[in-house]
Length: 308
Image: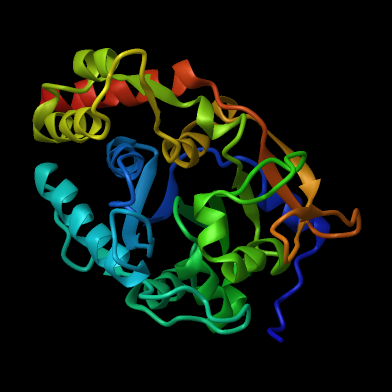
């Protein structure tokens, strides 16, 4: 069993406070899983208060991949496509992640992404390294298992799972790698948890809105528009959740993703929540201010297009 460092309540609460000023961040993303990660990647790069140091390709398995390793590779390729359309240098910036999920809770899956996260986390810094994770948490959990000391040097913002009052904790990100998900709640890593139901699912947009505020905003705006429109055949009364921008939005302005402090829940083998008030603290989002978040993203795309 992995022996994780202990963090006092006072230090933990300080680390869980929203940051002020510019932050250093790495982004862990299953970018080809659907179409919301692409918006999050672009949002990260266009946000001036975020110093994006690396992007990690996360594994996924659904109808768009033949398995988690194939999903990771397709995500890696999609990240490169996005950066090329942004004319953004990607040498030594994008790293392949795990080709499989954790076989057991204490068995990491080594990857370039996990090794780079450890390297960056252990660098001398005045502030913690923020890890925005918007897919299966395999890469981040593996890095923690490989070098547990990093939990004293990072803050993880993870979109995954459901609210504590929901009958099941399961959703796509959390459910893909339950052993890795358990590490997020058991290791005492400072964690900003963003649930899906009734929180990030508020971040919906529509084809008319994307045509008005995204299309024509440079090569990247046209690409985001095209993948959005082609994702669903029938656009009548249709909206699409862009879940993943919630993690980026919390770093930009935490008032847009309101949150509270709670004892870390226990993720059970049945993928439900259990509770112990003596557990370490985490921060859990409880809402998402849809208009403020999309307004910020659309303005940044417009500014980018004007300067391109």
